[in-house]
Length: 477
Image 1 (cartoon, one colour):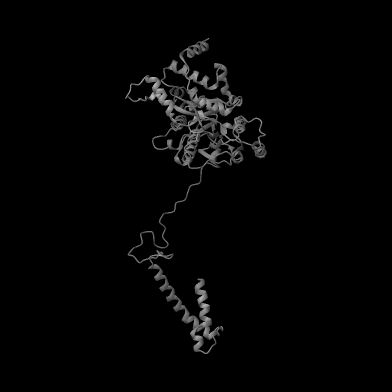
Image 2 (cartoon, helix red, strand yellow):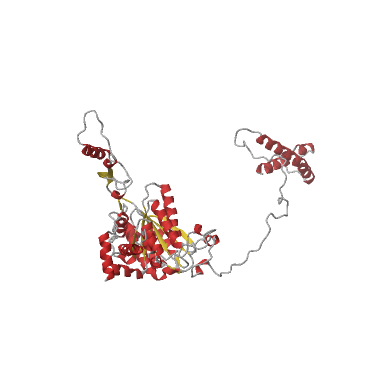
């Protein structure tokens, strides 16, 4: 466009027509000569530009090679391509029969369809979980943490994480060897060879050492490695009376992780699904912004919250294979919404509790540590009645009922007994996911919350027969 304008003005001042009419070169022509120049210039510049474009289209190299051209073809318009015709008939939409948002439904729905799960949970509806001014004041303490002024900190150093390297054979420097307790990490070859020699005794001349599976030793590393903690928080309406407990638990986790390399992610679930409020980060100021968005309202899609945590962990493992995840579910464990894929043809009756077991088993299959925290204050009756920690008390009660009714597994017992199905949700998730459950009051009494969580993820001790007999005799008195 610029070249055309410049060439036009050059034509006006230096046109051969001006010379033929006796006008000096470089002088703007009068109106009659101006009109004649325009009449001659228009077709001339048109043919020049067309010829130039054809030359560019034929070039095989250079900056203008491969310029887009539209070549004539024998294509014919399809039905609906004609001007003025609509390809899709118009149909008016009926207005929603339920006023307001989905979070205003206070009871469990009985006619769920796939459309119910399309809407993303509304974080702007309901009562605030945290006071914005309180979070803003906590963000101002970052300089104190960085300078070492946080006296209640429980981690070993602000420069490391909370997971001991002996729990994961991936970080630090090796300082001893051990027999592998699960999947073999890094094999210690000298210790493995020595174990094979000790087992075989003296080897005759000419024979080789034969290493058996029981001879394998793995390296144990020193130091610490960061955790990736995924907080899965229930912000449904049933949690309204338990929000003080939730705030206390989160503050305890903050006290142990802030300033370290541990990364914290935040997931909230309510209404018809779950949403990742904050991706895993070591910056607690970002987490403050996420916590300030949480509002209490709606239903309880607990299984969807666990599956959303699994999505976050899968994405983190795509970035690094050395991620050590820990999922912490904070809820009252009274689900009333199933997974979205459970609603459809052949699933007329929704089963949120069975979906909860399914989600926890998927989490266990992906080698993820799991801890559940029950904030229901009424659950403390089980610890007082059986005089045991919360997880052990529920396990003992379930196994006693299993022996009495003749069921084959703990999960089958909980699903079959109505009172257990209603109140043993946290234990059900922890058992299916290979983790441990705690009461919020127990968590607040720990010296190190993350230390107890990590220790619980290593425990696989079952109640023996003698303990069952003593407990049964105690109950029958």
